[in-house]
Amino acid sequence: MKKVKHLWIFLSAFGVCFAFLSWMQEVFSDGFWWKGVAAAALGFILYRTVINEV
Image (cartoon, rainbow, N blue to C red; front, side, top):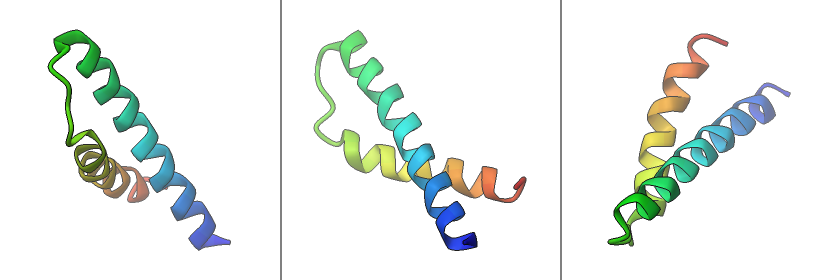
C-alpha cells in the first residue's frame, strides 16, 4: 500500500509540473520539445520534497 501511495504522489507531482510547463509553452509559444523530460525532473524534485513531509 505504501508503494502505491508513493507512486500516486510521484504521478501527481509529474502532472503538476507538466501542466505548469504546458502553460509556460503557451506563454512563450516557442515550444518546449523537452517538456516531458523537464516535467519528470521537476516532478522528481517535487516528489522528494513532498514525500519527506508525508
